[in-house]
Amino acid sequence: MIKTTPRGGTQLELQHGNHSNLAPSGPDNIIVNGYDAYEGKAPYAVGLRLSNGALGGGSIIGNTWVLTAAHCLTTDSVVVNYGSNRGWDGQIKHTVGKDNFFRPSGFPNTPGNDIGLIRTPHVNFNNLINKVVLPKFSQKGDRFENWWCVACGWGQTGNGQVAKWLQCMDVQVISNTECERTYGKGNVASTIMCTRTTDGKSVCGGDSGGALVTHDNPMQIGVIVFASAGCKGGPSGYTRVTDFLDWIRQISGIAYY
Image 1: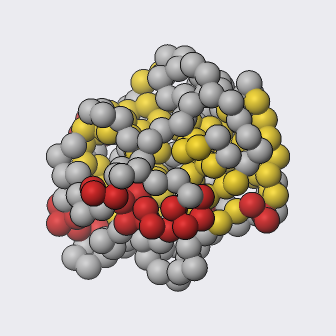
Image 2 (image 1 turned 90 degrees about the horizontal axis):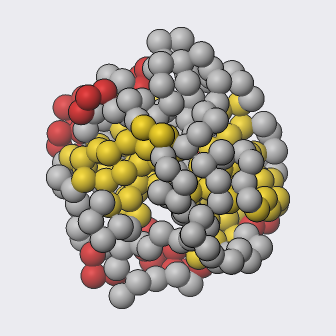
C-alpha cells in the first residue's frame, strides 16, 4: 500500500479477509469508540469488497455513482454492497470492473489526492439506499472548521475481525494547523481535513473510502483516508470533497449550485 499520509499517520489499510494490516496495538472497537448505526441512519453508505480480498467503504452520490478513496481502486474489480448495515450482505450487489474506476491524475504521487469514483449500474433509491449530497460550488472555499460530523464504516476490530454491523462516530473538524501539531508542520496537505480524537474516537483499517457527513444540513465533506498509528493517538484524516468538486463534476456530471 502506498503511503501518502502525514508523518506518524497510517494510511487506512484495506482490510484483507479476517486479518488486520495495522499494528497489533490496534483498537478494541471498530470505528474506535463508535456506536451501532440504526437501519437507515446512513443509507448512502456502501461496503466494498475488492477482487484482491480487501474491504473498504464508499458513499452513494448518484444513481450510478459511488464516491470512495482512490487507494480502494487499485484492483481489477469491486463488489458494491448497498442497503444494509451488514456491509457484506447488501440488499443489492453489483460487481464493477476497473474500466469504471476513476482517480485524479495526480494519484498517488500528489499528497492529499486520495479520492475516487466508481461508475455503477443504476440503483433505485429507497429508505435504505439513497444518495448523500455534496457541498455547493459556492462552498468551495469553506474549511468547515469546528463543524460536527458523522463518519461510519465497517473497519477493523481489535481481534482482526471485520465489523459485522455498521459503526458510526460523531466527531468535530479541526484546523489543519491543529492537525499538524500531531503530524508535523507542512505534513498535512491543504486538500486534507482532520477530526479531533475526542474520547478516543477514530476511523481505522477497513474504513477507507467512507464518508464524513455534516450533522446540520447533511452533506459529505470528506472521504476517509488515514488514521494515527494504532488508530487512537491522533486526528483522523479525510480528503476534502470541496477541493475536488470540479473533478467530480467533470467525471460524473454531479454538481450542486
